[in-house]
Image (cartoon, rainbow, N blue to C red; front, side, top):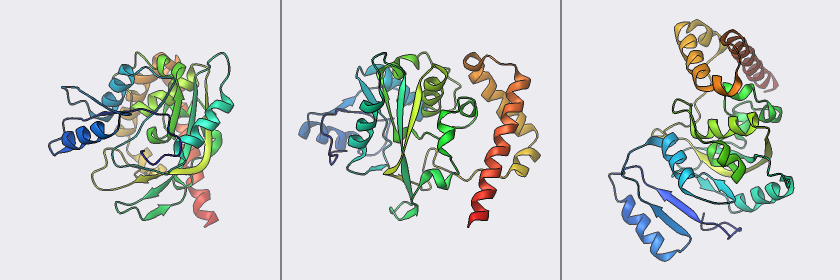
Amino acid sequence: ILSQTYKDWDLFVRDDQSTDNTQTILSEYAEREQRIHVLTDGEKRGAKHGFMWMLQQIDADYYMFCDHDDVWLPAKVERSMAVMLQQQDVNETPLMVCTNAKVVDADLNVMAESYWQYKSHHPSMFADKYYHLFYNNVLGCTMLFNRKARDLSFPYPPNTAMHDFWLALTVLWQGGRIVPVEESLMLYRQHGSNTIGTPPVPSLWKQLMGGKSLLRKTREQYDANKETAQISYARFFLLKLKYMLRIHWASISKKLKR
């Protein structure tokens, strides 16, 4: 972050009850760099609630999330801000810009040049608000969003899947837009201790044969998103099957192209 070509930023850091010397490292950086601010929070919240807690504390025009193990390429903020300023309007429509990413291993060896291709995400998915009821293709660490999007994200349902999932869903269902930037502007690291990471999507057959697991997961998604979508559970479930088939077909098409 310190090596970004765009310099007009402030970094707010929250430590989720680390048991190593993280606090000491943060204090040293904050003493050397006035743009770095360490937030004090006495609770262990996890990724979802931790990021949403921080978002509630900070008043800014634009926001970006960063995980502790990500590597931002130097132009990430500059390119994201350029698209944001080009796309925003005077009515402050909730707006989110999301970039692509390179998928790398723990030692930063490139596993895939494009996260979108790796996960079979087509750019059209970024505008599909129904797709986002079930799946999130906007990594929190790739997004930049405006104050309007932030304000509309509260209050948030505690049982929502993740903070980035909820932000993307809020933008689309509140009349906003998600603008995808195909350029990979960060290294998305995959390793054994990832909180989330990017595991492969189970096959359609495996999901359907999961029976109870599929029904339980769909019910959880419905309970978390029913106030947003305001549709019946029957329609919600049929939409879920539709997108499962779509993702399955995209995966098959990718393998056939190889």
